[in-house]
Length: 207
Ligand code: DC
Image 1 (tube, rainbow, N blue to C red):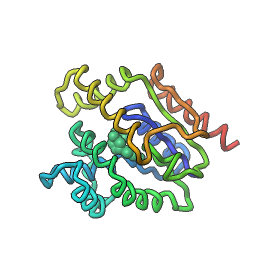
Image 2 (cartoon, helix red, strand yellow):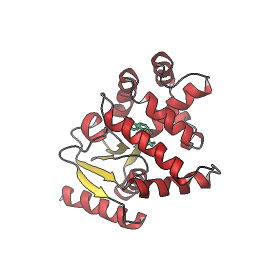
Image 3 (tube, rainbow, N blue to C red):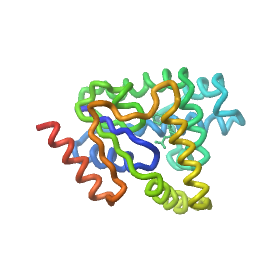
């Protein structure tokens, strides 16, 4: 079984994907982590995430097993990720890595922006997870504060809106709900309620 979970940043898709993987005994790939790792690698090398040659080289050199799970969570890495993600040649390199992961006969859960539309268009279950900009900002603010980052609610909200804009309007594989995806709006839900709703969708689809 392949489960595709897409949605904007801080919508809760990562948490839902993690729980679905545990619940149904599947491995999980957080595809945003790949873009974050590429963006961070370019920054670490002193480059510009919008520079195609630098970003493609970083994508080609990416080692999925060596991603620094802590450093890629910074807001700086997130912004760099959304910049490398608009470059079609970067997406092509990462597409192959994602499809290879999904090809495992045991099945998988993948979460990102274009899993249901581009990476795994034949996924058995597709979820599109979203929440209001305010709710997503509040969640991300909590995460960043726990990491010791200081940023105001308004500044973070503007940053997330900027990323939404870039993710939704890019020419290559933009963020959008697949025609056959189930919409899950988590604005008014806590983690337990969102996970329960997602499990319900998977069980209904599986029959
Ligand atoms: O989900 P996230 O915040 O970790 O994603 C970081 C960035 O990576 C996001 O701004 C867009 C990009 N991304 C993408 O373009 N396609 C994906 N499948 C996953 C992430």
